[in-house]
Length: 67
Image (tube, rainbow, N blue to C red; front, side, top):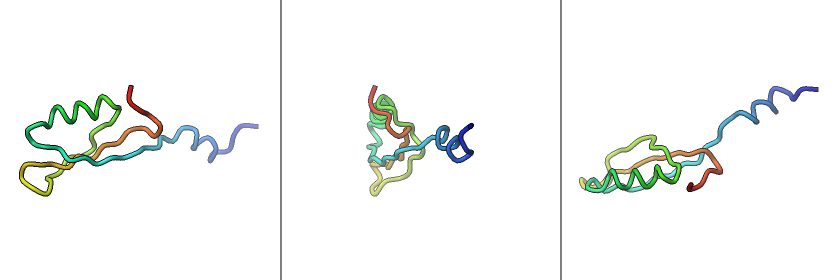
């Protein structure tokens, strides 16, 4: 008997883990490259608490770790 719709959906549905990180404006590329090398995808970046910083929001598939 084929699996039910709910069972099939749980097999194909991607789940994510999320992270936030401070990013200094003068080192943006290096910081983002480091997160990307660990499998994180940048979702959004917003102004931080002071003019020299930003806050980055990342996601990656749950269970994925550094390559």
